[in-house]
Length: 564
Image (cartoon, rainbow, N blue to C red):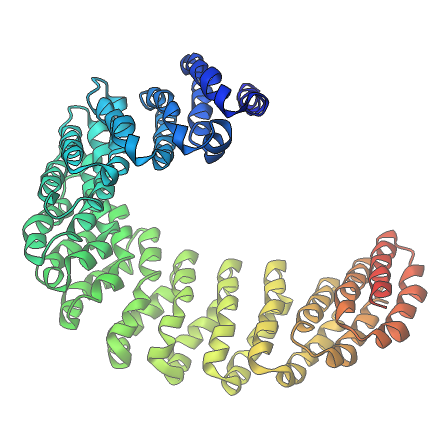
């Protein structure tokens, strides 16, 4: 209540007295709220930085400096959420301050925060330096870099952590002449005694490397990566593993091949499962920059060990990435080194592992070709189609249309058609529903003629199924197939089946038949609606004893009459 009251009061007051009086009379009085509870401070910090507040309440960006004193006070608050919101609002307000007043109003504010004795304003300053730096003159830019260095060397870990988080944003704006100063800050933070600071230095390796020559990368960034890769803290090693693809991309192929392979191997063998999980997801990304012999000699043995790792998340992470090695190895190499590994992961006891390997099958199909796929992977895929975990069956189902397009109609009819039809009788509704959409996608690939020859017979079979749930699935199939069938085929081949099901003894099926009529009517010819649909709805469904059937039949009838 208090928050909404504050917001609504500010809005009503601004509307009543106008921007000039609001600036002169209301803004100064907001200081009375700065000693309030944290939730009020949070709301105030958010409101003061909104474009609407600046443009409507105070009359535009030329007056935005009147907000700075309050936001500066909020940036000094110890509560992190309030401080972060104040920093975000200050960043937005800074964009609206005219250049003539920017250094006086904003840069000096940042310097005051840095010079404070308490950790919270200095932490806030770290998040504002990158905003102030691009618009400052060279003299002030040097002052800001000196201020940032003070934050990097501060006695409080929280300030140094915020400095480490801000370094990459500042690095984007510092020119080459001043960059050595930031490099020294980077080295300082990378050697910090707090692991929460060192792990942020890992991300900074990428930002710093972008501004350095190959020799400088080798001398400055590489030692940091090597040190963090064997850090005593698993959290730092995790960050290295998690960022390893970006690290090798920024450092280049030569440094990666010569110096970083041992680091990556250690991470793949790390004692902490979280580190192995992160490293496992980077196998293909790192391997792209390595010689094939190096991958075979150093990386593959680790990969094969990880495929049987005691931690399921590690195996799942590996499964989500390892298929990306197939394009690198080619057909012969995949057959020789990877195929057995893929099959092993496809048969893993953990559903997530199987799901992840299934989701990446498209990376292997172009490499192996149809013959190899049919001989080695297809049996495993068919086995998974009957997996006891419905999510696994669902994942296989989603992959089938892509597989059908790649394999061609003859191969699909021979190997996979029966499998797709069997899903229509799955015990899980989600699978049955997805199977109908699946057949629509396949019909789009193979054409209406194929659908008439191969899907319609199954629809006719489902029509007479003893289980009413499967008869309901027939109506879903009809609705989805109507999306790809021409209008004339909908009327001659699909709608007569709806007429049959509309007379089913189960009320739920008659309800769904009425809903299906409503869905199909917009795509029918007007003459057909008048001669066939409206009489049937009026004479049959609108005389039904079930109230729900009557309701949906009436909805369909109204749709039909509008179509007229």
